[in-house]
Length: 224
Image 1 (cartoon, rainbow, N blue to C red):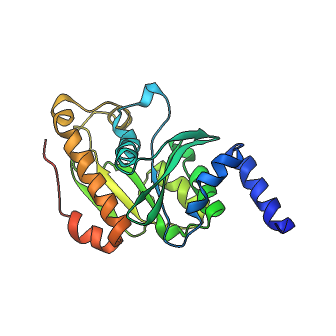
Image 2 (image 1 turned 90 degrees about the horizontal axis):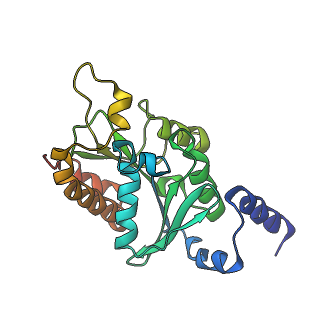
């Protein structure tokens, strides 16, 4: 192995946390041009589990079940590898809190040579009504701190997103309480259907591309 390649590998290993030769071998399949990295955004810990802001984590967990991903903690992320058809897919949940979501995702993309156009980010969105999803090819952060961190890490916003609507709170209610609050009974009743819809959208993107995903899913909504 050339010295520069070895040095680069060791730098990324220190950034991401130590891994064993067995772990490295398990992830070698990501070194392919068709590889996708799917990143669900959220906050770590029981305090934030099942909150609206963590719906990206929820979709990532569902996708992990579908693609038989064995998640493992590694440094500042929990992640694993699966496949849909012949497409290798890394699924990651950053553990650095929402405002610092970018570095753990960027590190994986750089380490495995995954083009930012094939880094699909799943996140909650206040500006979409609860139950609606929308796919974008690229864009700004729209005030979302996780997306802002990703743009800072990658240098631009040229990565696709799956926005999952959580709606805005009633007038006069603090936005932060809404975002970090848990779904109400009415929302919880159909939450499983919303997650399934988002999972279907992700799998379509992985197999058929972002534009096909947009054509099929951007007008769909689950109603509470």
